[in-house]
Length: 142
Image (cartoon, rainbow, N blue to C red; front, side, top):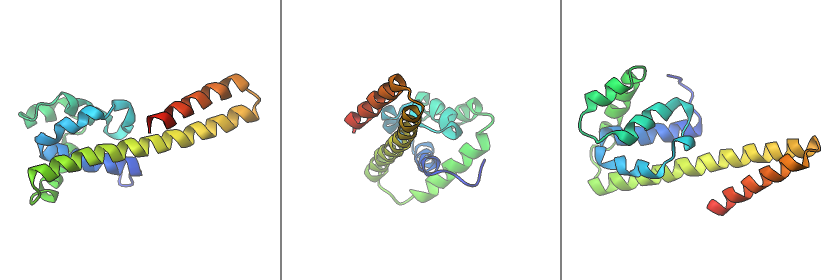
């Protein structure tokens, strides 16, 4: 896997470490939409959303390409949160989901801003209007 990760990918990696090592945090993933995750981690999140936290080997079998990466993330999560209480671990999972969503919205806002500017420059008022509506919906979600 790549050594240089984006902010969003690093945040996702931290959440995955936590969820893979501590199955009691899997509930936090209910709030995270797959569309809010990066391509790098989407398949892992997809499998985790269906994972009951019981049979780690069956989870690994669902992710043949990512198997070693998933094992490493799990071990890192075990080490990093070895001394944390169950309550703190669950709280951290929900906090990380919120961070990922915030980063996703920030990326989406800057993309929409650029697309609006391009639509206005090209004189496409219809496209500009549609993009502005999307941008406003995004602001309303915050």
